[in-house]
View 1 (cartoon, rainbow, N blue to C red):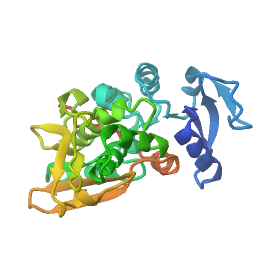
View 2 (tube, helix red, strand yellow):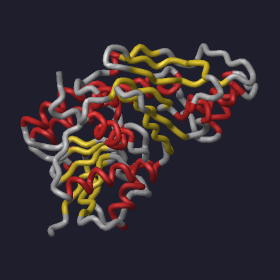
View 3 (cartoon, one colour):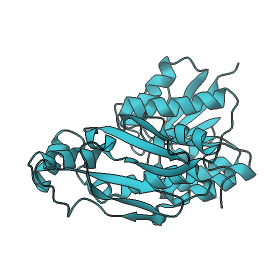
View 4 (cartoon, rainbow, N blue to C red):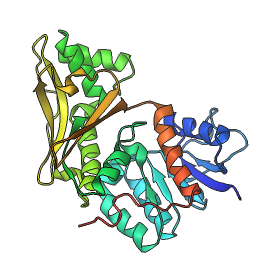
Length: 305
């Protein structure tokens, strides 16, 4: 079998971890080109062409790990319009333009995969996809953002918001500008993607009623978490006080958890690391494995309403 050429856009924590998996893993694939803004960086892979994103679109598979909207939207449109598979971890792109991209992929018989966009290395999208096939999902509920879980846990231990945020930043769990996480947008985008898969109709981030944690107070000893909760009619992300017996109440650190409730009242829970370069890169590599096996899945495909 000929080796498939991968055009990788982005060489950050996840991109470099993915590159290592491509180099060491068993799949018949190779990095044909890595596209970055600064081509003079000293940490770029040796023996691989370094170029512009437009050059990467010429590969057999395009993997986008750069983030953002403007560039990735243009790259995704161009890739799918050629019938080339597009793999991404870009939740903002999917929660804003996912419906359009899925329709384009279907028209051009391309593939659109994004297992790493929700849950990092935890197979949340895959689990929801399998359960949605029977049309039995009635509710999604979970903790989808590790930064806010860390901060709220620290606040429950007696810290105020500012010191809890500073601790999260020092530990590497929060960005220098944490607004995307603490305002609830990260969790809202993930919930929108999961809801789109669960109920066979694309739901944008704008459909999610979102309240962040910046104005939240936590009494010492109380468990408060940023809970993503939704059914077919209503999607919401907001801080909530949890009973200590609630399964979500035990989630701490960089862990994420998703509850999937079925019509018969049963609940499936899936949890695991929601962040980390190696775990997220593994989900991207698993998507590439599906392409190597001949599959051509389309996230949200056949379910746009």
